[in-house]
Image 1 (cartoon, rainbow, N blue to C red):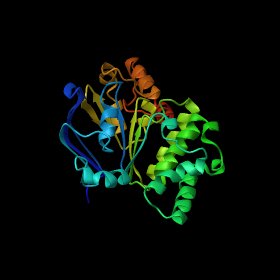
Image 2: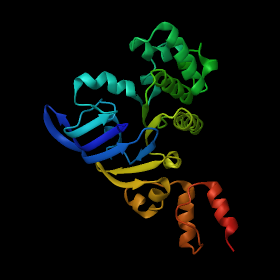
Image 3: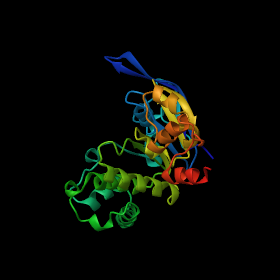
Image 4: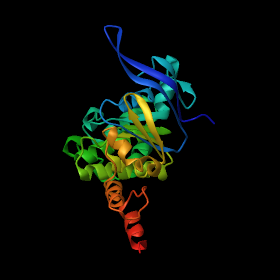
Length: 279
């Protein structure tokens, strides 16, 4: 079975007037397995969004190859198959909403794929149910909150039945309530619908439940592992200009004060459990 996404030793230069002006990705290699939930973190300019766009063939590598479900993104004949397998959700939901009624917007993608009308209706109902937005099907998208708009954008991707969804900082423009709505939806897609997730973010708390966390800096992968493995490197992450989950930061400070705690605490529940066991 092919990898869901297989990034092989890619480099990418941004160009100006046909000239290479900036090396944005430096020999990146990543394999994403079907059903995996990966979070990629890094500060602005680290290359994480550039990498995300390679996974959907929006950008093509200057050197190396990217395969999506076995299809090479450099082959123009594969673009249709690639974008059916890997959907993408962007930062600003307003840039992805094209219709004046919610259910019409969700139907837009399947219509462009040539899906029969009867099947489209079923897909729209299913997608709206998955993101808990069925009651808003007749509403105008511009009347919804930021979190609700983003969930409609996600429903539009779900209706196209991708195997993988790449989220490029989908919560960056949302308030805390909207962020919680969207993260809850992303987790549901992965755990209940078995959709492969690649989630680009700069909110560290959003990486806690991932299967794997990848840290990027200056166009390179500098750390990779489970959330516990990555976030136990508090000082190293701070050197990269990144934060860590608040509970992990608190744990680090308590350890400095001589309290015997494990370095890899990520949640409040884990902290309470460890504190209760202290003598």
